[in-house]
Length: 86
Length: 407
Image 1 (cartoon, rainbow over the protein chains, first blue to last red):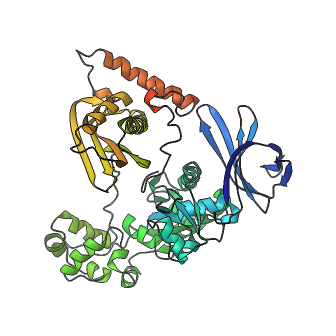
Image 2: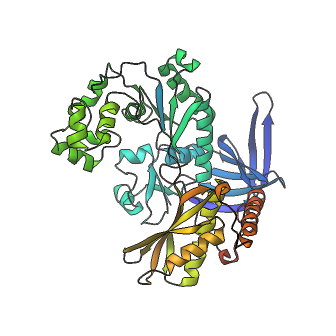
Image 3: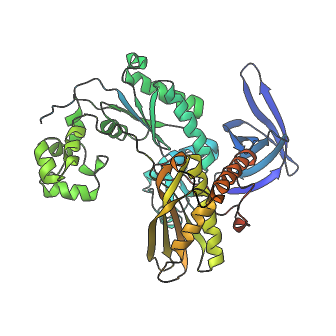
């Protein structure tokens, strides 16, 4: 099932300079912590002069689509899905 | 004129991403991997399937089917909306990788490219090795779930054919050595460009398979089968000679929209038409063109269709100019019925710099400059920051889509 949310969330982000890997490490959504295991896809989107980074990540149970706004440094959880039919 | 089969070293590579929209969705959502998934224009039962995953294809779910048909075949099929931004990003990365090997890379659609390696240093590596390398780079640089088919040959037609031989994740070379063997395993409709009607025409001329097609005389193809130069092109194409190395020039811009709520209310329809005109106008102006021809097509609730095109003396450039001309056509409908789909397009494109300023209507130049300025504001601050007043409450109507064969 897929759910579109567009909710502000808290994120701990990590950057590994040796491997040059940047990935959200932990997200907090609805008072629950989710530890990110894998970055499935990352891309950038421009809306006018604003630049957003889109991270498709998974904690092993759920897939998350996160949007990072480089203008105001905020994080939005755009959608979650568990890979099951709706 | 008699041509033998082309015995040159193959220099054309055709790359086709497997089940593009669905595979990309599976790449971004790991929990969808290995499951029957379809990407549909709308997830409602009547929504048209744009792409199905390799798993769904194995069950018999094909592009063009309706969501309800897919659910009959597989009740557990997962249905998702397309994500054009994500797909375009993959396309961009896909093009960047291909561009590392040759300067002549032409995208044929969002998931297909043709690379011409002639006179490039990459050729020394061998096209087969390059094909393997590109596949590895896709997996490493785009995503591990991304696979593609690679076809190598002496012309675009045979390279595409080679890319379709072993799906998914295949790599095939078609050249003079195996050309007849490949043809002997195929049907006429397996050839790109031969549909059921062409097949019927070939059958009528006594040609029933690709091998017989190959062995048919040039004159016979020209004079008896295709009745024109097309026959000669087929004669060359089948033998591995290049006839498809041309770039299509854009002749029109168009937008269409299937209404979620069918209506004959003029105010509602005007809102949709202005939004379609704004989207079309943005693309027209970005290409520095203006249009002399305008076309409107309407599908009614009873599936009847009415359309009208007209060439105007003065060019259209701004959204307002396009809209007012579309509305002229709109009011020429013989019967006003409930509309279920609207399609607008503009044609007869000319470079905007070639249009001399009008002597009598001096305000036009100003309006065009304002229109360009508004586009710049929207480019900088985001789509629809400024929009025509008629478009109020229309922000999320008419979604971004990738058309078939387009990027």
